[in-house]
Length: 385
Ligand code: ADP
Ligand code: MG
Image (cartoon, rainbow, N blue to C red):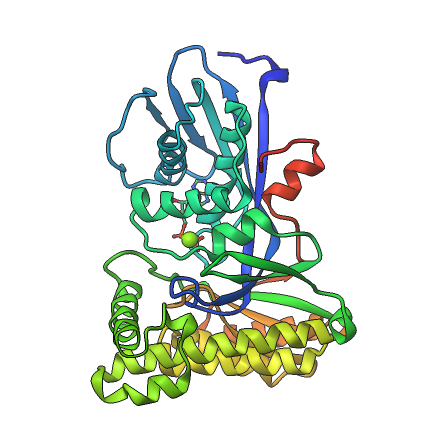
C-alpha cells in the first residue's frame, strides 16, 4: 500500500520529568511535572485492507487487527496504542482503517514516561484521523484508562495529563483530585539562571502490577481508608499529618510511613509552587532534596544507585537540589543546577557514578517543552474541544 502523502497525518507528544510530587497522583494530591524535549512521533495512514495495523521503529513486532477485534492485551508494546484505540471506541469514536507507525526517542522504562508519550501521541493522531475532538482532560484520562485497564499498569494521571496539557517554558501544577491546573513559568527570579538536569541511573525500574509499586499502593489504600473512616476526608490529598498521627496505632508501620510520605509531599508541592512563583531556586532545591529523603525513607521506593546520584549531586557547586523522579525502584534523578555550573556538575556526577558502580549514567539538560495539544495547535490542528 502506498498512501497519498497528503493523507498522512502526524502527531507528537513529549516525555516528562516530575520536579516534585511523587506518588501523590493516585491519592488526590498535587504534582509539579514538566514536559521535556524527547518525543514520540506517530504517523497514521488510511489503510485499504480494512484493518488496523501498528508498527514501531523501536520494536520488531507489528500488530494487525480487525476494527471489531475486542481481544485482550498481547503483552507487547502495541498494547499501549491499542489500549488508546479501545478507549476511543468505548466513547463511540470508530477510526477508519489505518496503518500507524510509531517512532520515538523517549528513553524506555527510565521513568521519563515513554508510555504516556506513546499513548497521548496515539490519541492525538487517532482523534484527527477520526475527525473527532475531546476536552483536554478527557484526552489525558482516556490515556490513563488505556494504561490501567488494557495494559494493566495502575498508574495515576500525572504523566498523561502533563504530556497532553503542558505549555512551553512552564512546569504544570496539577491537583489530581479535580484536575485543576496552573502553568508555572520556569524563568522567574533565580530560576532564570537554572537548568533542569535529568540523570538516568540506567538501573531499570519495575513499575508493573504485582511489583513493589502495587504493594505500596495497597499499603497506602489501607492507610487512606482508616483516615477516611475516622475523619471523613476524601483521600490522602485532603488529610493532614496531625490526623495521621491520631490514627497511627490503627495502621501498620508500613502504611503509616507511606501515608506520611504522601501527606508531607503534598505540603512540599504547595511550597515548591510558591518557591517557583517567587523565583526562589534555593527554596525549590531544598524541597526537592527533602522530598528525596521522604521517598527513600518513608515510601522506600529508591535504590542505592539513585541515592548515590542524589548524594553526589547535592555536594556539587551550583546544585540547588536533587531527587529521584518517577515511580522509583531505579530510573532517573532530577537536579536543579545553576546554568553556568551545569557542565562541571554533569562531569562530576558521571565520573563519581562510573567510579562507584562502573555504569555510564546518561545525562540530559532539559528545557520545558509543549505538550501534545499545544504541538497540534502550533500546526494549525485542534484535537482538544
Ligand atoms: P516509562 O513510561 O517510564 O518509559 P513504562 O514501562 O511505563 O516505562 O513504558 C515503557 C513501554 O512503553 C515500552 O516498553 C513500550 O512497550 C512502550 N513504548 C514507549 N515508547 C514506545 C515507542 N516509541 N514504540 C513502541 N512502544 C513504546
Ligand atoms: Mg510509564
